[in-house]
Length: 166
Image (cartoon, rainbow, N blue to C red; front, side):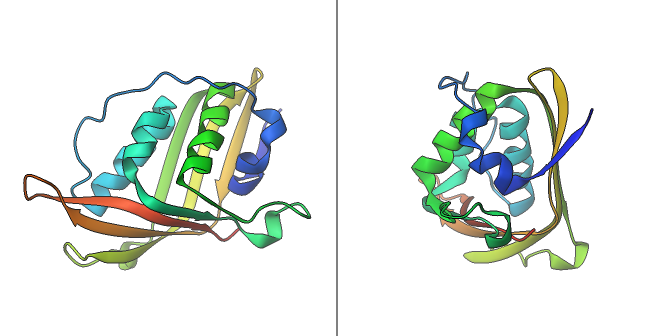
């Protein structure tokens, strides 16, 4: 049986994800463009690596969940440390992860802006949880990206805000 959840439902479902250790991976390259940052985000989820995810999030990162998908009394926003803890629990509980982030071709950002918002119209994660296949889907999300200059003078992008709009 295949189950379909929304992204906030999976992230907020703390009772499903109880493990606390995930094997880190090494980042292959710096996120030097928005497209590359999203490719590395997919890699981090597919590798189930909190270390790789951490490297893609700005220090002041904020996740904003879709209010309609929240349980009464549930937190609607959280920061980087809580995001990493939620990811750690989720990554420890799932396997065989495949992720896709689909952008509207017209929504691409101009070259090397300091701050820009990218809209994803389809985020889909397929995984195995407790032996069963699951699909986690979000119909629309906005990613606020921030560019900064690295010590070697190159540009690096980080996600400063991820807003889910199911």
